[in-house]
Length: 153
Length: 157
Picture: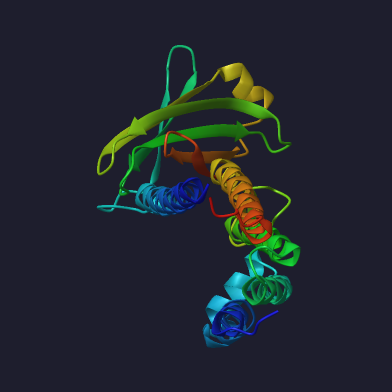
C-alpha cells in the first residue's frame, strides 16, 4: 500500500510538472507568434491589401495578405478570417485561410474576396468605404491551446 | 493537535504569497501600466479573491500540518487544499474568470476596439484529473494510516 501511494504521489508530481511546462511553452509560443505576425517588419505593414478591378466585368478583387511568423518553440496553426461590411453592417464578402507554421518559420496567408459591380452599387461602395473585421487565431500544443483576436478595421 | 514548525511556516508563506505580496506588487507598478491593467481587469476583485483564498488555504495548511495523518480533520483539510489549489489554477488561467473554465474573453477598449479569447480548456481538464488523483491519494493515505493505528498487535508464535 505504501509503495502504491509513493508511486501515485510521484506520478502526480511528474504530471503537474509536465503540464506546467506545456502551459508555459504554449503561452510563450502563442504570444511570440501573435507579436511576430502583427508587428510591422522591414517597413511592411502586418496586414496588406491588394485591390484589382477587372475592366471587363468591373469585379473588384481584394486580396488580404498576412505574414504568419512563428517565433515560438512549438508548431502553430494560424487562421485568419476577414469580413467586409457595408455601413449598415451587412456582409459584402468574406473569406479565410489557415496554415500550420513550424517553430521559427514564416508562411504567407492570403484571403481573396470578390465584389461584383452589382454588389458595389447595391451597397453604395462608390461613395462609402466598407469597414472590415479581422479574426486571427493561433493554436498550438496539438491545437489544444489557442488565442484569438477579433478586431474591426 | 500538535504545533509543529511546518504548521506555522507553511500557512505564513501562503499568507505572504496570496495576501501581502499582491498588495505590495500593485503599489510598485507604474501608474500608466496600472491604468492599462485596470482597463482590462478588475484589480480590486482579484486582490480580494486572492485574500479570501489565501486565508482559507493557510487555515487548511495549518490543520493539515497540525493533525495526525489518521485524523479525519487531516483528510478534510487535505481535500479542501486540493480543491482550493484547483480554484486558484482556474482563477489565474482564466485571468479572474472562474466560470469560463479556461476560456477567457477580454475586451480591449483602446483604438477601434478588439476582443481577445484565450482557450486553456485542455489544461483545466487536466487539472481536474490531477485534483481527482490527489484526492484519491490523500484518501488512501488516510485509510492506510488509520489501518496502521488501529491494527491489532499479532501474538508471537
